[in-house]
Length: 127
Image (tube, one colour):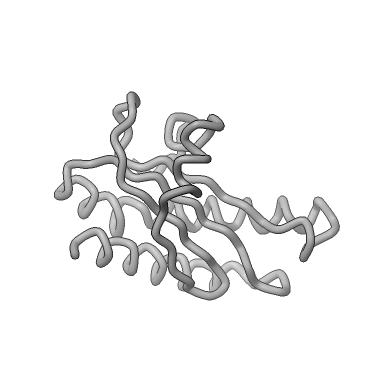
């Protein structure tokens, strides 16, 4: 199902600090992906966090637009590229997707790069 319910959003200081303390990361421009395999109480396979730097994008309108595009591209592609590999590994995953680009990109490019980032994440889970 192509939805992004509240349970799949990463929240809570304990989980976020655990993700950033001991995580693996890689770059897939314009995204930086931090991830960590962990088990937590919820039944969802992946919890995801989206962030855009306030230093690069001063206007909240631009930050919100980028986060909305990121959420939509993730929502449409998570079932196809990420979830099958997470179910094989039988662990849950914490993911942070940070936008590190210098300008607001169009939606088609963000979709393509999100697909590439999710494929790379699935490959790293497999190894």
